[in-house]
Image (cartoon, rainbow, N blue to C red):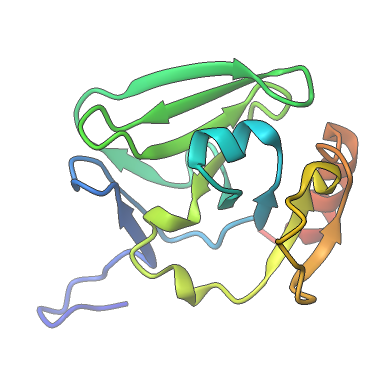
Length: 159
């Protein structure tokens, strides 16, 4: 996209609530996900929807970040960064998939540009009031396991 001054703009941008942190990328997400696990519900106050990227496919800019690391449903660590001012979750880096970074959809400038969730995980702990509405390509009862997600990524990745 080119702005009104003729400068090439990144395809996707976003920021935390106070805009102390922002990100940009020209890459399409590898996939969109919905996580229904109890940890995401507690951390977000709701389920988690986001975009998956490879490390290095985007840039985050801001000051210091706050880290909160916890053991996820897979039993592996989840490395989570937050804005220290507004406390918005910026990114999650799962130990089980170290090359991937998950960015919450809510911090994208235009999250409505995305039309379909590719992967839903932890459906066995999904809230009864959340309905699919046929918008998921793959739903799994647990974390999806690294092997299954790896096969899913291999089928999706056209980069």
